[in-house]
Image (cartoon, rainbow, N blue to C red; front, side, top):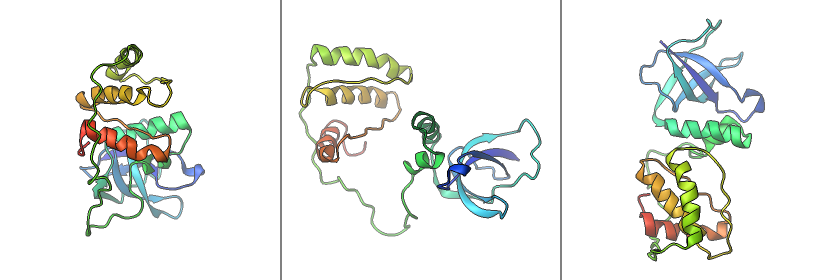
Length: 206
């Protein structure tokens, strides 16, 4: 038997905690989507596994057990770590972080897969020579990226000054190390422009 800590899929601040359950499922892992009996009424609730443990420090009275594990939907351990970081950094709930990685509603097993940008052509213009300011920014930030050290950097510059190229070079470094990157666009009107730029550099598959 294993023990797991789960976050309940519940938009209630009072339940924004990790709850410990027992599990007899061998395939359970960090990120698994599960059903658990919750609260006094033991109503089945969806939850996501944040920790898997072989033992607990103290015996838990009235320990409840995982009801089932969804074999089709799960998050990666990296996504769960990101949820933890988001909760600490932005003071949001566990479920707020989880919702960033899960689709709204129940996914249909039938129907067409929607790829909204499949017909978009990427911008192929690539800057070969960086300015001194761009190169300096990349040299300062790159060690933090390679060492996976979290910090905050403000890239200041007017429109068209080359900030996006800095982001692309740093993201390239992340991808080459086998990791992923999240890009947030500050204005919805810039979405198409940014996507074209990134498709041109990284291709549709990224």
